[in-house]
Every structure is written in C-alpha cells, then in structure tokens.
Length: 122
Length: 493
Picture 1 (cartoon, rainbow over the protein chains, first blue to last red):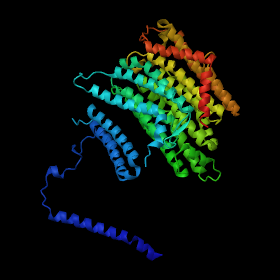
Picture 2: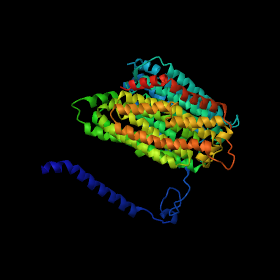
Picture 3: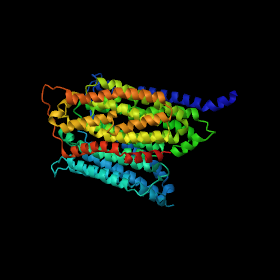
C-alpha cells in the first residue's frame, strides 16, 4: 500500500534533507565568516607528520606496530570490562574473582611489556 | 548464589594445566625482572630458564600421569578428561622434553640468547594440552590460536636471518588463513545446530529429522581444509618445506615432532565422534588427501639436496599415512592411526636429531645431504644410528616402523580399500628409495675434504640412544604402544 510506504520512509526523507541543509549552512558560514591568511604550511596536505609527496620507501618504524598491538590488547580488555561491570549483581562473587584473575593475567603482561622496554618511544 | 562448588572438582582435574599456566606466568615475571636488572648487570639467563623449563615439563608430566580421575567432563562440557587426553598430553610433554634436551647446544651455538624462546615453547605446549582436552569448538579455536601464535614467533626468532623472517611470515599468513577457514566452518556448524559442544553436535547429526545436512557438508569441507593446512597434508602442504627450511633448526624439530598428535586428536574427535554420520564426505576427502600426500612426497623428495627439505617432504608423506586409516572410520583404523603417530614421534627424534649433530654454526648452507658423508669415519655409532632411524621410517623389519605401516595396511584392507592399499604399497617402495639413498650417502659417498662435526653432548646422546633402543624394543614387544593406542582409539567413541 503506497501510504504505508510513505509513512515508513518519511523519517528517512526528513533525515536526508536535514543533513544536506545543515552541512550547507556550516560550510558556507565558515567560508564567509572566517579570517583567511593562507600560508604554505597551512595549505599543504596532511600526512601524519611526514613530508607529503615524498618517496614512500621509508623504513617502517617498528614502534608504530608495537603501539597498535598493545592498543588492541588493552582496548579489548576494556571491552570486557563493560558487560562485567553491568552484570556483576547476577554473577556475584564467582564472576568477580574470575574477572580479577583475568585482570591479573593482563597486568602481568603489561608489567612484562613495561620492563622489557616496549613502552619507550625513543 | 555461591557458584564455586560447581567447579571445585574441575579445578582438581585440570590441575596440570593450571600448574603449567602459573609456572609460565611466574617464569615470565622472574625472567623479565632478572634480565633487565641493573644491579645484576643484565645477566644472560637463557641457560637457567632452560633448566627451569625442563623441570616444569617434568612436573607437569608427573601431574598428568598420576591424575586420579579416569573420565570427566569439566567446565560445563567445554573440556574433557579421558584416556586419549592423558596419553596425548603425556606424549606431547615427553617429546617436547626430549626435543629440549636435543637442542640445547644448538641454541648456544646459534646465539639465541632470549629466554623468551623457551617461554614460547611452554606457551605452545600449554595450547596443545588445551587442544587435546577441548570438547567444544570455541575452546578448541582458542587453543589452536594460542599454539599457532607461539609457533609464528618461534619460526621467525632469528631476527638477523632473512630466511627465518621469510619462514615466519609465510607460516603466519597461511596459519591465519587456515584459522579463518576453521572459524568459518565453526560458525556454519553453530548456525545450523545452535550449539558448539561436540556431544550436542553429535546428537543433532544423528537425529533423523535434522534439516541442516547440506550446510554441515559444506562446513565439513572448510573444516577439513583448515585442519589439513595445520598438519601439512597434500593439497595444503606448500608452506611446509619453506617454513621448515627457514626456521632455526630447533624450532623445525619442535614443529615436526610435537603438534601433530594434538591436532590429530581433536580432528579425530570432530570427525569420528561428532560427524560420524557424515563419514562418506570426510572419509573420501581424507582418503584423497592421504593418497595425494603419500604419492607426492614420495616423488618430490627424491630430488632434494637439502636435508631439512627432504625431511619436511617425508613428514608430509607420514601425514598421508596417518590420515589413511582415519578415513575408514573404524576402531581398527583409529588404533592404527594412533599407533603410527606414537611411533612417528619416537622415530622422529633420532632422524631430526641427526640434523643437530651434523650442523656446525648457524649457516643454512651446511644443510645438504652430503654432509652426512663423513659420519662413518668420524663416528661409526652415529652412522649406525642414522641408518637405523631411516630404516625405521622406511618400514624395514626389525624396527617398529614396520609394524606401524603393517597396521595401516591391515586397517585399509579390512575396510575393503584394496586398490588404495595396493597403490600405497607400491608408492612406499619409491619412498624407501630416498631413505636408502641417504644411507648410501652416509656409507658410500667419497668426500674430497674431511668433514668435522660437533661433539655430541651428554643429553643429546641419551635422547638419541634411548629412542634407538625403543625402536628395537617396541618391535619385539609392542604391547605398551598397542595398549596406549587402543585406549586412545576407544575413548574417541
């Protein structure tokens, strides 16, 4: 039935128009109202601190990889914290001590990474 | 509600693994505190950690052997403890103890000074133990990943060597890919049955009103592909020679001997226990893979000059022999398979140990078969050891390799696979050719220069001598191996 179709998709239509309208407003206002003093540094493209348009064959610093791996591990630990914190009343003391065991193992891994020098940036 | 009473017995039954994991954590912290301490002037602790690791393995095997419970399903049926797990864990621990004894002097010579090497070996043993006793798809996947991650780092441990880095990278890419295939199969199985436990899957598959048979067949194909990658069988064997040749020799020995029994145990549980009603599907695929492995390795290994690659190809052939009786899905077949696995582990010790005796220094270029040529003049006992070990691999009578091959043929004939038995018999003649050609190189090749070998240390000589004596002893009295393999086969069903 066509009226049900329009009823269901009407909010999507509204969202589309509001987003287009809002982005046009923000863009034009920032173009009109901002003070522009162009500078070579400000106009150049951004490449995470490296020189843009350079030869891509730099030595890959292993520090970036280490940071990424450590981030994944401890971020997943944080992901496990959230449901545990909410459901602690249901899993009572058994669940509490299981999670403490998990935290202790990851803390031992963190201690190892600290001592072995994986957290040094230089 | 107090839940701790539910798991009290489980912790008592699981005590060897708990001990192993606590020992790993304590050694990790102890090692890092010592190795980075300024007051002790940054000592090299790898030899001490090595002895500590040997002691930990010994204690864990004692705990495993004297576990008072015979059969238990623990942690809400995600892990099982029965005869198969006990024997498989004992063999994993025992063979890794023997491997560690074998390669102590190699580690000193090639200057692998990080104590984390032994810790990674312990991690992989822990993962293998968990894999053997896992009864659930999720716990099996976690155990496989733990073991595989440790192996990736072990393969690429020599950071200065391009070979080692290449081997680790290849192994990592292929191992991650095969774990992905396994995970896809597990997700399909979960989607169709709604459970990840092996007992529940078996009950679903045996139910006559089960609707998901075609999806399970597709999942089985991915499952077998993933597992065949892990044990290096025929269509998925390509990584094996490169990874074995590039890794440091101690890691290669560890790869070749220890993980196969654990991965095969879980694979057998999946195929013969959970999916036994689909044995037309996985039986044929495994038969094709087994035949392909045996034929392929027999012909390719003839042309190899490098000893490590030759042994890697012969390992592929042995995996073919191991898969062949599994495809019959009978009790005799499973017993023949476990017997062959146990004998393979005992025989691999002198064969791969030979690589350690004949390699001086760290260069891979001293890897060719012709370096064995100086053995009869410099050490005739080692020459006899080498030739007897290769004879056992070939299956020549007064050694136990003969029995293991005979049982495989018996189980194939009992399941009416006559043409398969005939073809395998003919092809094993071809594989005997390259084993005998190594013996010919040892005794009859004329060398221009003298070849000097490293002196054999006491631990290495004990391991090599004991395994050779066992090769003879089990021919005349195979009762122990027969009993163990019978126990392992019975506890699958």
